[in-house]
Image (cartoon, rainbow over all chains, first blue to last red; front, side, top):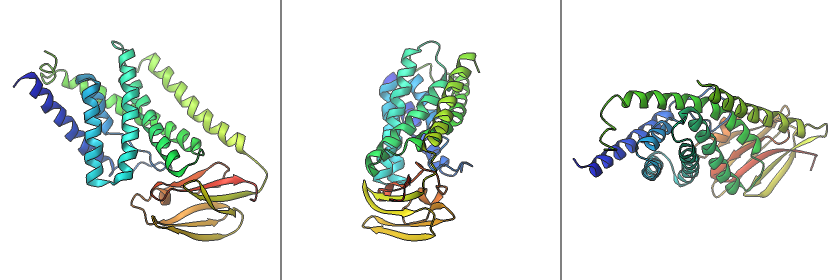
Length: 174
Length: 114
């Protein structure tokens, strides 16, 4: 298999895994009185994809996962939300990764990604209900984004450490 | 975890917790409170928080039932798929909100009786 098709296979696997994780996540209730707080399991895949495939292909991972899960389990408004959150989160994480090239911390990148995800969704909500009164809601989301972001960051870091022992990624960057 | 990571996490926690405390502090008041219901920016009703009250708001997108009791406003019923507004906890302090995005509805606690 040449390098281009190999990348395509890995990309498809990422989208499939992120899709499953976003489905699994909907079955995990969090003991939190704030609606809309989620673990952010698909972000494990986004983080790993950012590091192994780079940001241009990771846009496809995020958009592909959001559109597929939207068509299967959601509706048009849930797609616009997930897209705003997912893409803003990706932008922030890609910039952080870019500016801390060799000494990056997946935990920090993951936390900022989670906060950016919430910010994107709250901004869409502000446009839809036409209110500026969601600052308190955003602050609560940000508070819970910190522990979930740490959890996702540690999971992604450990997963990447294990995967780097295999030859899976060796063929990506020959 | 490294020192730098802990420092950033502490700063972020301080920002969010401090922001929440500041928000409640700035909005604290002795004045009577009201519940304001709006759809897409248009105010539908302003109701006193101190009275027992219940109303169903209806439009083409669907229905939401608001109940005010014991100085707390809750959404008890909605026919939207996500049910996020129904799961939200009751609100009673100025600036708190319940949002129903599919119906573009927002319930806010505001200061003053109108």
